[in-house]
Length: 467
Image 1 (cartoon, rainbow, N blue to C red):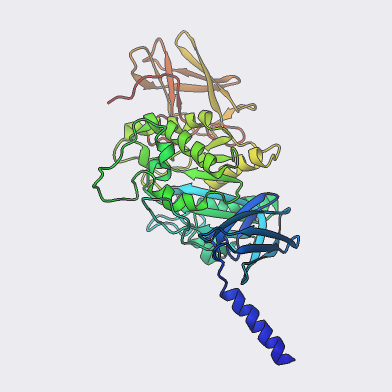
Image 2: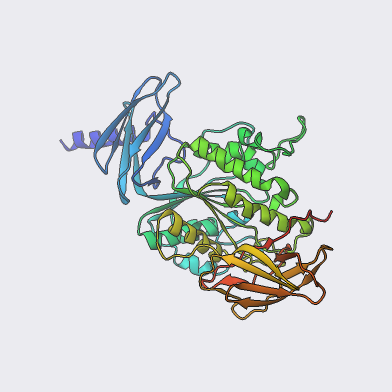
């Protein structure tokens, strides 16, 4: 009897480990599925085989059929947040997924400031990294970090695996993404899955599919005989976004733009086209898209165009439904493009998510926004929205405001905070017509609402950039 039981157990184990069902890396042990959703799952099996799936949270049995090529896809109804659970699949042979959590799933993407891991880059640290790793013990946060890849055609899978948070796994993960997940976990009290798909030094065009790129004039393409690089249009979409399409998630975080600073005139439309096409391909409506305006830094080239890139990022909010922009003009670094303070970025992304996506009332998520300019003799009066309790500098001088007359020559303005906004004046400008704030590559933002959120750079004119 004991031998028979042992043989049965070994047979079951053999079936589990030798299953003919194969799944993309997204579906594996430790994965997180979006709660209360029709979550898609797909894979391969024997040709024309019947595939059954049993979910341990409700003991429900799902049945689907593989096509002649062995491909299959179905959806699972997920419950409220919880776990761990198991998912058992079979096409005659068993495959069991363990430690599956149900919670909130987010994707973080972009270039190096999103990619920058908790351990930092060489000679470029993350502020407070050791404390982050000291506290990296919440096993209800799971991480999925894609290996870098670029391809000419869309791929079906990636190199990655779901991992529970630990000091070792968190060390290698996006500091912005990990801390965003940690904040959501603390506030929502549910499991969090965070997916990282990033590559430093890459332009937005590389993250867009060909259909999205066709919507924008002015996109540059390499010569037909040129060797493929990571910066070519669509190559990162093909390898690092396409395999994720259809995976049920709550929203996307985006931190990119530095590599597009020389083309601000089309960047807002590129963002609009990218998000629109991603949403169309996911086919899950207008999920939240929260992104970060590029931080202050003294760029080695193209410095005069950087503020126009930030302006394009700001404009994108009006073009992309259900989007929001984090401003970090107070958290840059003159000497490195990778500011150390990533926690402030994560917090501000979380403010947007908690307030707008999860409906947490009372959380302020946006700083002062330029509303209007009026002129009274030699004084410019600037009004703002999102500052119901007024403005502050927290004791700093306002040195980033400039004022100009019809000659388009800007001078540093003397600024006074009033009950209605700001008064600006310069003895060199007798008839002001335009005001700019922090409209340079490297300003240290000093204007906030009393909730502590900074104002984005802005200008009241529409003058062309100096060539």
